[in-house]
Image (cartoon, rainbow, N blue to C red; front, side, top):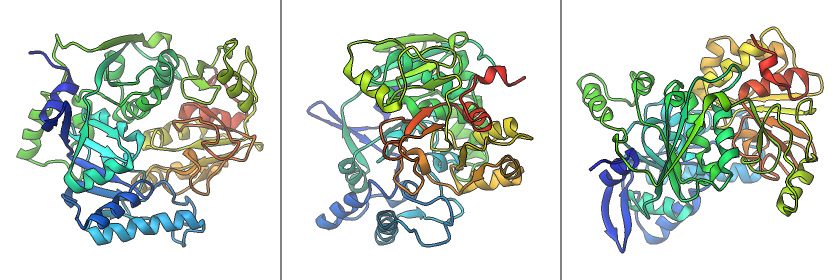
Length: 460
């Protein structure tokens, strides 16, 4: 019987079924300081331990400051949450990459870069953007705090099988168009709720042409169209990225692992519950204009004229924008380059290549926040830090930073930030902050000019 990749992986991890709900074994559990304290408290109340500590890894990322990480955290709530994570990991013997550790970083960036994330796995974390790890051909999704406790206690979760969707993108991308533009374009077409109830497989020649960093960006934002997660079948690009990484099998074990990974694909005649198809030639540099990621347009399009929809009008009022307007030339005050969506070394290289020899606008503040200590070190090794400094950009230390405003990195009320992060909700980057989502190149161009530009006109 022909199967989708999702179904192959799901079926291989079913431990039991209870009244139609599957008990799924979890190969890797990532935790951080925001969604784990209540889960650990639940274990303490029941007097039980973490079932498989070797399958659990913790990092501090959401609440951490991105400057002076060697000093005590100033913000009281952030300091308390980070300390609680440290205390819980010590008590329950869970491996922790705490603040200052050479492997510390955003949870969805350190998993792949260390080789913990591999094809064929089931991966969960108390964080919606866990779908990032699906880029390696794994089932990865975010879970709630009660499920974090469930996974800590049993290494399993109870879950209904999602429906499956395949999104196929064919063709060659135009200049100035990146993975962020692909996913923002797809979400603009399917809407922020268009993937609800589905686990999405991304396929087609466009996807196969992408680097692993780019594939992670696309899978990362699957959740922004309401999907349970997204995944991409592993191929030679995947294997080349993984080979030699710290926690990837070596020698004969590598050969055996790769042989298994090469079986992970959707069969030719596999049936999906839904199919969608797009073409790379139709995708342009994208920007969002509203307060959910589905409110996106091509850079040379106008904000749509949608009438008699109160939520649409409310969103535009919050953003200080009008129907029929262009975002070209829109002045911005802040640029944030970072987050689990776009804070890998490839993203920083794209920015550095564009801004080399240029200076940022005097009207704009720019934060570049690498996704991990390893990304930070690599950027410095390649001299990217010097390019950023000369351009007037601020290269900070790793963390989630201004993606979600749970730390000290917030955008002031009423001011515009062009951001490489994943969400543009009201107040996401700080109370009253106005967020415009875009690719790293679009953000870099806006940083230099002080306004939103069509990057296709600025690059060779």
